[in-house]
Image 1 (cartoon, rainbow, N blue to C red):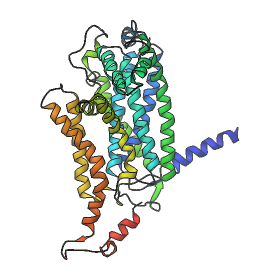
Image 2: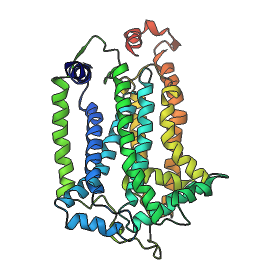
Image 3: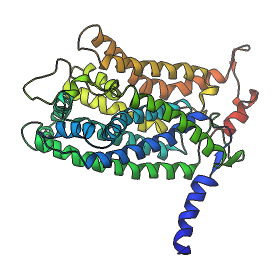
Amino acid sequence: MRLIKRPVVNILNNHLIDYPTPINIHYAWNFGFLAFVCLAMQILTGVFLAMHYTPHVDLAFYSVEHIMRDVNYGWLLRYAHGNGASMFFIVVYVHIFRGLYYGSYAIPRHITWVVGVAILLLIMGTAFIGYVLPWGQMSLWGATVITNLVSAIPLVGNTIVGWLWGGFSVDNATLNRFFSLHYLLPFIIAAAAFIHMAALHQSGSGNPLGIDSSVDKIPMYPYFIVKDIFGLVLFTLFFSVFIYFLPNVLGHPDNYIEANPMVTPEHIVPEWYFLPLYAILRSIPHKLGGVVAMGFAIVVLAFLPWIHSTEIRSSAFRPLYKMLFWSLVVDVLVLGWIGGKSVEEPYVTIGQIATVYYFVYFLVIIPFLGKLEHFLLNFDAQERKFVRPATRPGHAALLSNSY
């Protein structure tokens, strides 16, 4: 028995207790832990909801009502799972933007970053098919619109759509497929999350200064475990406000109407966390081009470790990058706002401008900004000439500590 327990204890000790953590990380690093908590909560509540849910077009909507009205604490399970998806995306988006701000995608953490992008794609797929299960109006018509996008793929698009539908339209076979996938994918996400953490612990955590902190580290417990628990308490309070006081504010009111294939909603929109991607999709006046742009908006993140051109990680030493980073945040918020608007002027033009800037940021600004910063850093403004980096005070030490 001792031989069985010891490896498990050693693993937990190495990754949760004695794991060396940079002493200067702050609460922005809490969101990775919070994302794992959200995933665990979604799996747990989803398993209990599946015990009472019926994946049939004639019964799905009413089984959800049964959960809300007749199952003990069913309302709590449903609200925790529904709002938990929104909380999950809030945490994940903050986690991603923190990584962008502090250069967490750079080598040697590139594998961790790429696995994280794969997890993001899995989360989005799981959230989309989960949105279909309540079988409200937005569930039906959102599934119809999004799955139809696959038909834009040359040669095999219509075949794939037919496989997804299991027939000639979004119907009972579609709902059964989506329910099965929605139950399966969270466990795949959990496995990917463990790979993500293993890759992180292999290369070590970064820090706000973006420098080599291999010497200045302390054990994770009790210092950062306590910090994570404090962050979890604050997050739980924030989450509880939505569960108990604003349970429906993040959902669409049309999804509380039973799905009717004979009545099309006036304005079909996805959940709020898909709105920036939806705006990019609508901004391209070509079906296949819009689908490619929407997918590439996420995939481009995976290329950041190889397309960035700076030797300095942290934005603390990059004032120009800091301003451009916040312009990206504003741009994504604008895309989210446009995604919820009707397809009319001036929203179409604003969405196209925001879409162009999004891709310019990743495909033009990121690859060339490092070269521009290197040029400005090595230029002596007083003597109007280039000097070697080592002659500038502190520059050589800064570069030598960046990794």
